[in-house]
Amino acid sequence: MLNRTPAKWKEERRIATSLPPAIVEGDRLLLTFVNHSTVLIQTEGLNILTDPVWSDRASPLSFAGPKRFSLPGVELDRLPPIHIVLLSHNHYDHLDLATLRRIQQAHAPRVYMALGNDYYLGKAGVKRPRVMDWWQEERYSETLTIYCTPAQHFSGRSLADRDRALWCSWVLETARGRIYFAGDTGFGPHFHKVKDRFRDFLVAFLPIGAYAPRWFMSPVHMDPDEAVAAHEILQPQMSIGIHHGTFALADEPQYEPRERLERLARERRLNFVVPRNGESYRVPEESQPR
Image (cartoon, rainbow, N blue to C red; front, side, top):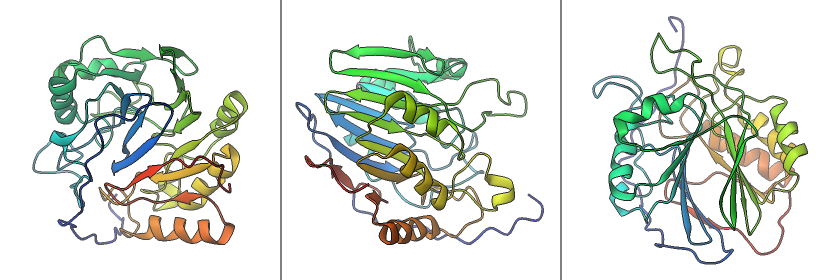
């Protein structure tokens, strides 16, 4: 930390915000990238939100810590009714209590998390959270089953709680197909284990940022090359890059993750996209190149 050389980022205060529909019926699938690791998944009349973060800083303090450089692509007050929230782990850029409190007050969703993370959610007013271990599952409805799956990361919100709560990824089994949300992770054997267990994926959300310097970050954060390797293991019809462009959490330049991933996708002809905040995708009816 004393010798780091972080690249300079600039604030993007102008951004086109989108207004997702209130509901997406049937097995149609609409995916909206909000920012960082926050994604809105809409299908079968359900609205699912991952790692919701709308705060200006990924920090316990309002005046210090990693600040926001780009605005959310969907305004918090203009979200459709949220039925489910998936939390990958308790770092401040993924578990944002101020945001969760507002979502709880407005929508009262069912909140899923890995072991130990319910300890933090009382302050957000979350009642009866669903706490799961790796490989456990819950059938939410006739058309949706939620699986808690492994990740290679760590946890902690202070000096006193390091690794006292579990981190995870998630698999959603919908009527349309399986969706994989990697959360925050380094590259590791868990991708093969997830692939062996679930086989076919429609979509994979894979982190691509906060990776420099590699000697320090590689155990817990993938770089674009490793995200492509994960895509090639999982073989989804489509991968979407997350965990980039919002908070300067590491030393790489602001747009380097996007530029590297887009170049790799072109060179290898992969259906792997890096959305702007607020950008939406309708999963195509026909299978796409992998």
